[in-house]
Length: 209
Image 1 (tube, rainbow, N blue to C red):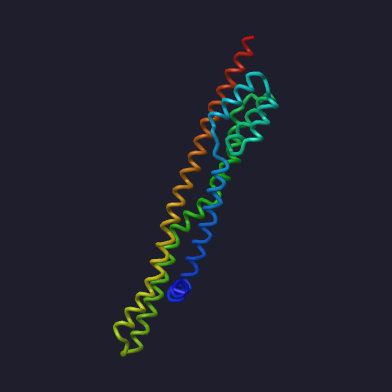
Image 2: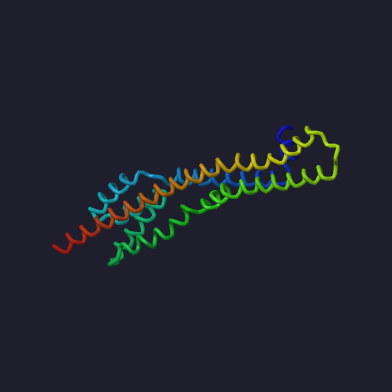
């Protein structure tokens, strides 16, 4: 009942803030599960791939990439396919794969960041509307007690408090998810350098023979 009273006293802007908080929570959980599923031990994957590729086990290496979740494995799979086709520019295949994967990592992050910025403004707008309504009531009635006026002002401030209450966790969630996305991106860059270096050394050995 207290929650419903606060929502009623705060006005329509409270429902907008609540809806924003629900959407932010949904996308935060969705991205958290995605990152948890796609984070892997990149060094272990590279060690396994290089051991297999040293024996020219292309099919086995591709199967290992297919069975490993995450953008790093998919990018490495694209590099192995390019090597198998005999493409001269393996790095281009890696870059193309990365361009496909990066938007998936960043999807919905900007939405959470936007909510963190906009929700306090919505709360402040609700407070401004509430204060305007309070001043209008005061102007029209000369018999309002100080307790009635303070109660009206307090109700007006509810939206600002609600906006900040929801926006602060949104901002923390955005920073947390952005850090995890950056960590995966860094893993992709390291893996790209290592696999291209491996193929260059392998091609050099083949050329020497």
